[in-house]
Image 1 (tube, helix red, strand yellow):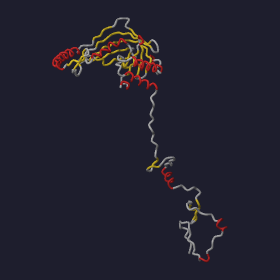
Image 2 (cartoon, helix red, strand yellow):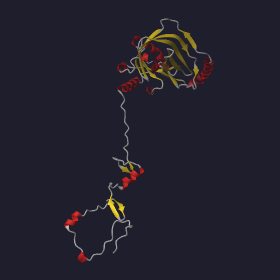
Image 3 (spheres, helix red, strand yellow):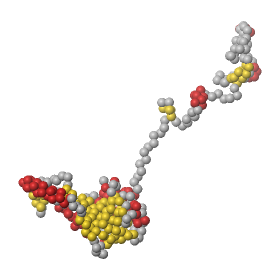
Image 4 (cartoon, helix red, strand yellow):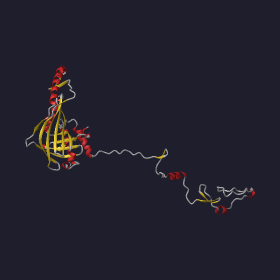
Amino acid sequence: MAGVSPLNPFTCKTPSPTPLHRQSKPSLTHALSTPSRKPNQDHRITGFGQYEPSRFPVVPKARALDDEWGEPEEEGGQETGGGVATAVEEEVQVEPSEVEKLKRGLIDALYGTDRGLKASSETRAEIVELITRLEAMNPTPAPTDALPLLNGKWILAYTSFSELFPLLATGNLRPLVKVEEISQIIDSENFTVQNSVQFSGPLATTSLTTNAKFEVRSPKRVQIKFEEGIIGTPQLTDSIVIPENVKFFGQNIDLSPFKGLITSIQDAASSVVKTISGQPPLKIPITNSNAQSWLLTTYLDEDLRISRGDGSSVFVLIKEGSSLLN
């Protein structure tokens, strides 16, 4: 049979039929001298009907597709659903610092002490120990050099200042009188301090405020001079609740028979309170030159402040809006 035309794109030629008796096994020398062709070896056309093995390595099909689209092959990943699986990052839990632990411990110790009025001797000892440890870790060693950090409203959480105890003791007259809040507002730009106590009763709320100026005397110490006292105008409460009974000298007194009379008194008192509410607060100038005090800030951060004053008194104050108040 004739050979394949040179225009045939295939590399093989059709062999001529050979009688069986003329076929012979190739010699060992012929087998060793004839190069074998690998089944997957690539070839290219060099002429009509002649092919030459490619000088370039064979590229696997999957790799060739990746190279064609310009996407590098991912290594070290596990294929899941046609993509490379990525490890899920675990949330890293940050342990609270020693200072945060001490702060939380102090707040827990203050619970139920009514700002120090009802603290037992054992609780006071625990509070003093926590305060001392916090003072040793004070992140603001020079508070008067960081006056903007002192700015704002601070809520009193605890004190050992005995002169405040009679004021706090008015809470024992509940539901007649209650100390709602004791606070201090510091304005470092104008060097002013405002101390305020808010009271509430069954009919109205009011406040007692003192305004003062302060001077910086050392990196931790300020001198305070009181200038005036202000008695706030009573404000009528939105709702008046009549207690079912009150405790008087250890005896419970039932008030239900007097509800009609009490309601009439409340109506009259409400009218008086409304009249008073329209008046400006009463300001009392403080001209006594001895109306001065000093304050030493021994711990200060963004939400907690510890100060010491006259008579070895200590004050623990929390910044308004801090999570420590919760």
